[in-house]
Image (tube, rainbow, N blue to C red; front, side, top):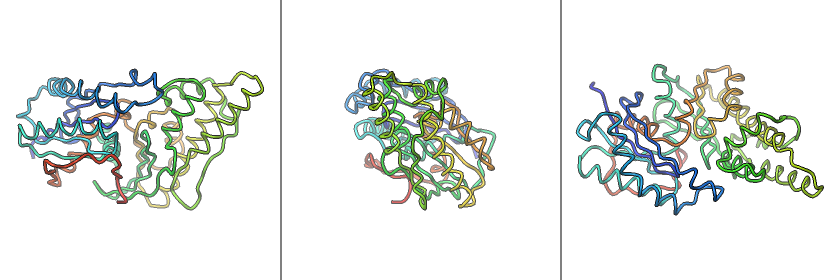
Length: 337
């Protein structure tokens, strides 16, 4: 079979991204225009501004992805775009761009679940290594914290997920409480490097008997500690609070993921999504896991289009192609519909 080249587009949140990927593993280009600096003043993503910025950026990003890959539209075999979940206005920009390209090229167009993309970020991240099925995937991305069992390609069983704040949301909210800024994940990690993980005994919500997560109580515990210290007129030990908070999150994520992998007979573990860039999480799960652990390189942890192309490759092999009238799915679950 000849090389399959897919142009993928990702606009689910605040990154405008396009990539060309070959055979689901080789990244020919991966262009990302981030809006993080623009949204930082609001302490989070401002949806209306995000969609407007996508409109301003999308054509340039797609053109650059094609140029960096040294291909034209005539060299492609398929198009792919994030269909959901994500911000409705942002998703529509990417989808409309992909539909326009489909009309002009008549190539197959494949809508991809954003969380599925994060799972498949591991494949281009390890181009010479094949993850072994069945595998247990921990997806920690933005508003999502999910445990997914995969017995084969495109076969997903959702074992559990967050019941309230996801890990990424908790990082952002606690960073705001500690006046560290946005995005919260990198800010918390940097502060935690100089702190003590045992200074504060923040709670862990184990939710025994399920594979679900909850980080709302942890966030509230940090809030109460901050208010108590402020009421006493004391300075906040920011580094210690960040380290103790991060330790609580990592402890729960790693413990539940490895327990689920054991119970369900997984042969490998994947960790993907923005929070998978966290150094403490990466080191702890590799250290504790008796199974091979695959975590994508940092540039594939945050939102990007290469991961969308990697997932689309499997759909292309299956013969999937979407009708031109498909819509954005802002609340699209990866499994368990």
